[in-house]
Length: 92
Image 1 (cartoon, helix red, strand yellow):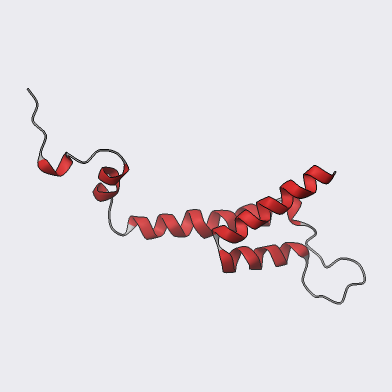
Image 2 (cartoon, one colour):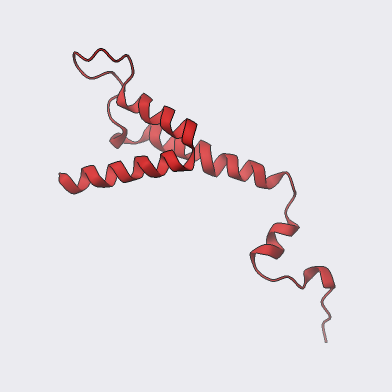
């Protein structure tokens, strides 16, 4: 018969999180919440042009605008970007 120790009695995600290093969780949040969405927006074709459109007076391109939104809002900005992509594809 195999006996379990009291520390391993937790099952599921709570047991896994308690076994992780305490410094790992903030890094995971930073990478998955900010860095990967920024990379996705920067490389996506649906983010718009990388130059300001035509005769507009705004010095920023649509892509730069999305990058600022994702940088400031993090995962919420990324979800807004995904929502705008889906809406644009539905109209085309």
